[in-house]
Image 1 (cartoon, rainbow, N blue to C red):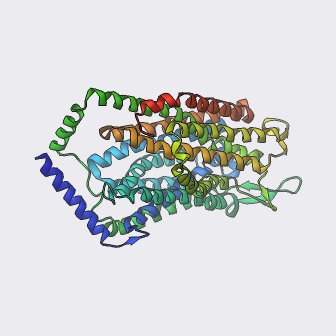
Image 2: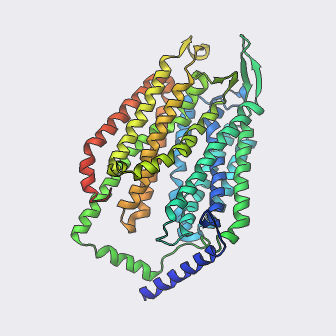
Length: 487
């Protein structure tokens, strides 16, 4: 009976994939992949565009079209928002698998996020902020885990194109993250901003057009959903329409498979899972530092970095595009390096420890920036006499991006290699929970910048993550043995 059900399911899957392949390909991949590519690109455009102006929107004065929220409180709000964005996908993925299917979940999530951006555009109040962020958190929970699942379902289990498909899809993520801060930054800080001059005749922004940035984010989300719902039936056929429930026979077989593991295999499995939890613990502190880019580093850039370039002041939000731009440029180099003779010798723990150390080195450049800033007065009477050079910020983003490429994709691969098949989704959820915890911790860290000073915060993060990276290096041999042959 079990074999019969399995064969029927496999035959249905193969038939569906054959029908998709009969539609033709683009760059050797199903056309449905590029529909998912553009859907994800517009969703990431919406999210990263909103995120790029969020901390500025909260902290600017009422007269500047901001919400006049103290920086400490704004940093906490930012941390909890970005944290819960990584928590709700656990719920959204479960609901899609059990009840509604991936396609409906993506549509529900997209519409909910569109409404969230629209609320931020229409209600420029703290109540509007709360409603908008809650809608974005809920919508992201439905959208984020399920569109990635659809990418995998376009291919047979052993299809060699699967890895390159996810690489193409990842480019969509970074393309949206790259374009959004540029366009939305121009809307909020230039095109719809009211400008004037200070006492010395230098150009300044008197009020910002934040709400038009949220409107652009809403439009981006709507475009992605319109194209997805118009074209999904044609290019995805029935993929993701129904929830993936296990039959009773399949559930019984999963229990039998779990009970038939030998004592030695159980020991190996237990040690590999332990490695996942150990590395996930370290990763919490990487992301807590890395996510300062959208909070404390954005605020610092806005106040203390000299953004003038050939007579034009670069909008603060533009710098949110530096990381995805560097990822697009550097990712192919890392793909080549990891496949090289030297790269193959580096184990996963070594790569991840290098990521931690590189993150810390990046914050040392921010520390150097604080040394070159000169101010007079304090509080509301503070006057910036000399700002820090732009190169310090660019070098920080450069090292942070290299660190991310050493740690993030390697970590995702680590989960898929070490996790037992029956626990793969659960342990991937544990990995995502690390980002949830990290963002909340990052919010608390950013909330102390005003009290302790940026130099103290940046140097503390640098020292802490470098020490953690060195500690990881010390235990890499032990962790490698616990991985039992998996690199």
